Image 1 (cartoon, rainbow, N blue to C red):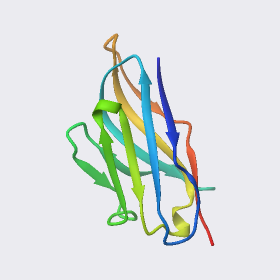
Image 2: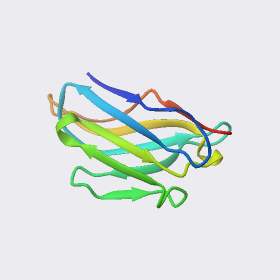
Image 3: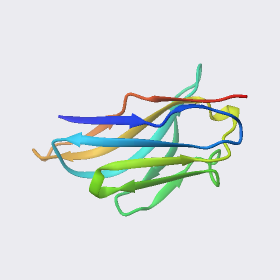
Length: 120
């Protein structure tokens, strides 16, 4: 059993910053790619950023230069530093990971989501 717990969302003014965290716990052997997705009201869920275990990153064009994804492998945690936030960044942000469990099964997991609202 694996759980993903997200934190760090909230209300921020345009131009402000937030840092999201997602910690994985449970029967974990190894974590592969970790990432963040978001879903705005009435829209499909979209990729924000991903990071491999080795640290290679990938970003959506809409967040390049403003958002930074990072991870702490020792803590099984992925972070998303969001700067220069815009109203169009308003969405529920979801953590997503590929995990090898201790029984050597390989599965994809989603967090419960955390709301980010950018508004004056």
